[in-house]
Image (cartoon, rainbow, N blue to C red):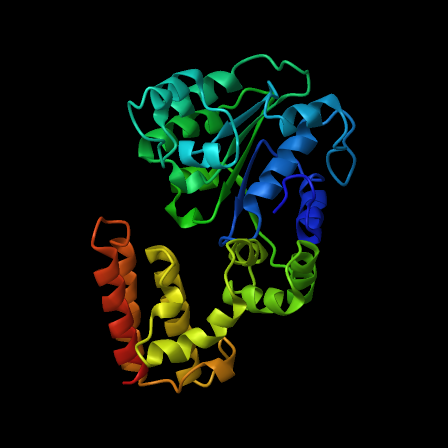
Length: 331
């Protein structure tokens, strides 16, 4: 999703949140619903010089400073991998370490960055409109960094506000959750999400397929489209796997492959109980096998996900998953 052009369901949530008071918010829900975009929109509005009920003006010096990643009163707390992906500058020490090849970018929110955030929250506001700390994805804090943030949430300086965004709220410390006002992310209606995808240059037929493949999550659907995936592949995948043919997924990562297999297993379990599938069209699915066999397959996929990032021989691992899928689909 664009950081500045908000989808209608994000704009509606932003307008509602801006009418409420609180020093710390937790935006939570499954992936693909726009947690980061909503969190940044809240930060922009809190710091904007000409804010309205709909959010930031997008034209003032404060909005421009956020656009170019230089606002002195906004601290963005993310894993270094996410910072680089979203073009936020790293701290001087971290950038030097990466430039000197001393280490790789961290996939967790590091304690050094958290200490910088705590120190930032205690400074005087440079622009005079208070300060904002944005944490995303909040579940990437470990216990040490989470406890460091907790102390500041418990006794916040008077002019700082926090917005935490997460796709896995259950992984956060209960004490972190209890110090924040929670906001469950809203799901857009399917027709609204499809119209938005078309506005992002996705073909209408492909938008419907990708939105279904993403379980109704528009940001994930847009990711599928921009990754260059062929919508026909998603429709053909179930019966190809039933034949033991995994060629449609030969360029997919292990995580992408497991995600598709999980969704197929999920839909077949629904179908075996007479419930409409969620991720695939019913006409594209083979006949569902016994529920106990599908449940066993689901447990095996869950176990495989826990080790998908290990340096196994990728070809052999994925070949084994395709073979197991064929057995499950023909049980």
